[in-house]
Image (cartoon, rainbow, N blue to C red; front, side, top):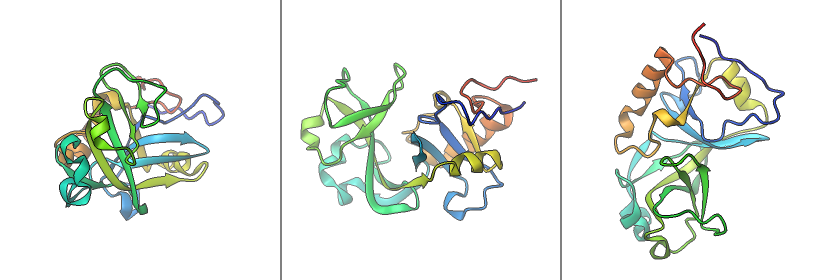
Length: 198
């Protein structure tokens, strides 16, 4: 099994991909983490999917509690700007691309997921979004940094279709993703298609 790296491909993007921290990644901020990449271009931005905190949504931002995904707690999204909040959600109805409160990151039918504007009034979004998960902080990389970490074996890139980024059981996500990576299920070649056994 091999991963192809095509850094000169102008259409290449990791947006919407799942990253699994390998045992070789030395950064303690990402020990046994699973991330969803939200943006990738001149640098990258993502959130850690499997670090729930003890802080409940009802205590932190009570107005979002009714729309919160289970477990209804704030997640530690990464080591950058831990006082910043990022909200992810699923659309509850037909997605309107002209609105400003929600933008899709994953657009495949049945798996849609996007960033919700936490400055919006949650009562205005009832029936529009569901399964809101709020992250404190995020993971960020400068241009070329994430690609270098992947090439060095620090991250495995998986197709998001095999995983629910808003799973109600985030504690099992790393084990699930690591097992899938070990068997080659859903492992992506860096230029986008699934890796095939040689």
